[in-house]
Image (cartoon, rainbow, N blue to C red):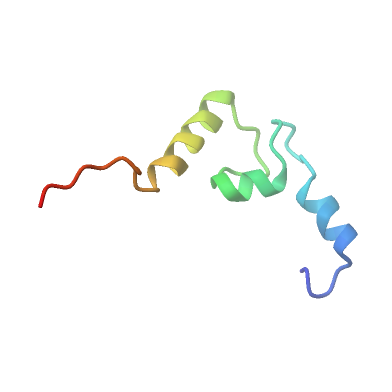
Length: 64
């Protein structure tokens, strides 16, 4: 879409909140929540928590 639409249009679409749950389309895509259905705050929190668990922790102690 970014290849055929002007940047201002793409930006406007990514910053829209069609379902009214407080998350923009860009945030919905990042979290993996449904962009067309209202997400309750518990669903948003669970998606955020799941996203952060995908990254390894930085303070892991390995024994050699």
